[in-house]
Length: 285
Image: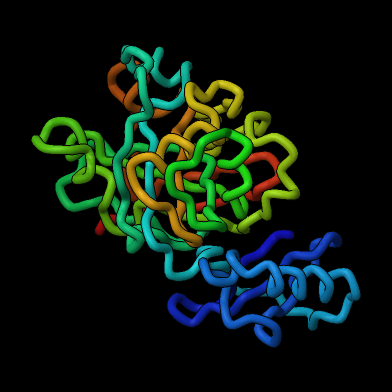
């Protein structure tokens, strides 16, 4: 299923995109798309049955904003340097273990919402990423099979980053990762049963119509199952938590000088195979 949330910011309603591409209203069945829903097999079953029966009311998508596909996200765990080609382009050694940092849930915006270039920024960068959404409480998972059983679905994430704040201002990476609007998510949460192999997805990103990133999750150093298993050894993952799993080669930071960092007026578009497409215009904060 392709689950999403539509409407003005803060007043989104749950919806479903059916097999024919028609937007359907879920507000008569569930209050929202969130962790408790993803952990409720019976509620998900009712949505599937209603979708298959054709009984869900149609929504007019004209002019309707698409919000983040997940409400009340608990935490966003991010994996750095998780693609072989990205490590090569930045001159970094592939990590022996996953590199973990965090983004605050309030960085999340809709897939077509404005992204703000922070005040004082000269090195705002792009990163298309596969987001993993947790559907069952996960702690100390033992195997890759068990890890994938705890995944509710997948989505497109844009891990916008400010490289000076991240690398040159001291401390951890978090300062360059948590600026306002720095995690567009969506358009859909695609349930795990529709993604046959999370290690066989293409990822692409364009800036002002020019293709910058063209990768595949097959290049991940630590695959999705290992990332979920590994993270569960250090923290409990709850339904509605999100893991951003890293970005392939092609970021501005990895390109020759002068590096083409983002500025107000730029347009970024990104997509992951089967998971939908995003488009954001950048403006100054």
